[in-house]
Image (cartoon, rainbow, N blue to C red; front, side, top):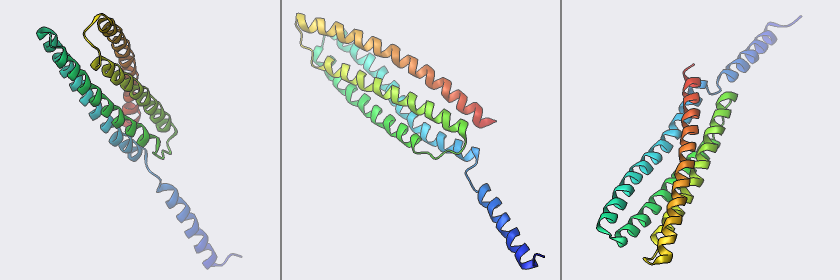
Length: 181
């Protein structure tokens, strides 16, 4: 026959196991961690969007004035800003990867989001490289040819960035839907 002391110890042990199991992060807590990190990425993207608007306006103004020096300076400044955005997004992807998520669905969504951020970061770095090339173009026939090539490169990268943004929005919507359930 079991003693009452042994029964109490077994009951306490069972209660402790149940309590420790329940102490893991809840889905809401895990969603909040993801949201905290992704907000940093959203801020970096807003910086890029603002810079893109400023870049377009600066390029247009320099073109109207035929001020190639201002055009190159704008490209240099924008290249630095975009590289900074890429660095911020690298940190977001790294922080997301470092989350210990117990929820399998959240873990999969986080991985998709982080991979999308990494893809975007690569495209941002390529865009910065194209702008850097643009900043070094000289005004001569070869420079004008180089300008056309860089413009085509930037157009191609912009299309790819749009695809990444579309996928990012899709994953974000899936995350939001799952976290609200």
